[in-house]
Length: 201
Image (spheres, rainbow, N blue to C red):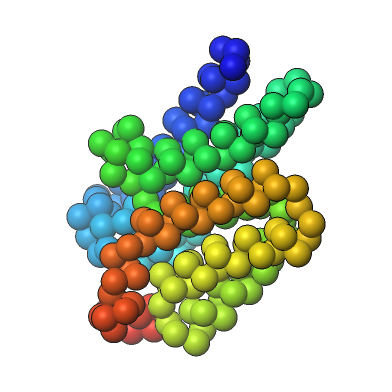
């Protein structure tokens, strides 16, 4: 691998590591890492600081998942390894969000950033994921369950759309990371102690 692709992958990680939730919440004087769920993502920002900052956090986290792959697809020369390099940029972005160098490698759960990656891979598959996400939350009230099932739905969505194997492999890796980061939520769901969005308590 030459220097330029390596720099692109590193840049993707550094972009993914930018903690927009922390940066956007600073004006309120609240460190979201010490309040609520302690997560730096849009759900915790919304709970603590309202829908406006929550939406801005969501959009910023989605954008940082999408843009590194979009840029890589435009600037990398056509070659057999191009799709692999694009996939590595996507993986690096999600890893950056989950393990950000700026926060001592303690980051978010990767759902919004993963959504940005999925949007690049196949927007139509994202629609399926969002439908599952919304349905799961509507029925259960658990954002975590919606995130888990919605992300998982992307994989069969890609398969049904006939997308190439590299996209399915990347999506599977991202979903595995997301599920791994949700292990505490999964434990609480199984125990019946997970916090419901409907309760807002």
